[in-house]
Image (cartoon, rainbow, N blue to C red):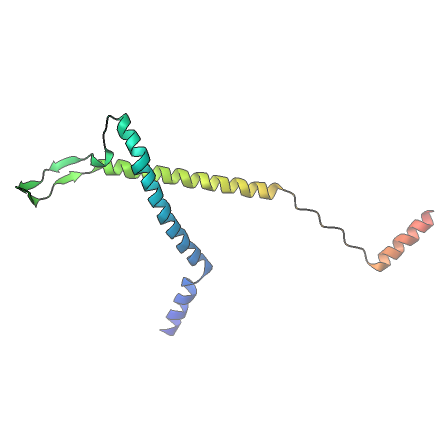
Length: 141
């Protein structure tokens, strides 16, 4: 049991797992933002263009609800294709956003790789090489 606990501890606290957990949390928050953009900004515009159609209300009713006054005896059975359309739109917006972010990161990385590194200052040669260079220069004169 101790070995299992040690293996789990090693796995759970590796840098990659923690980084992945942070990514999942940020991704969840990003998903909420995109859902809000779709539901609150894009879909009303599309609804206006399509004469007030609310996509989340679009459905094909297979069997209507059975009611007894205000009480629902049997719930409606329907295919909610409007919710599907909205989820597909969410997916495309998230995919486009991620594509743009990755493209910008790749472009920045390429630009950083293309910049030449500053050349290091030449090291001073050893003393015997300096002495030989001085002798050579004196002999040339």
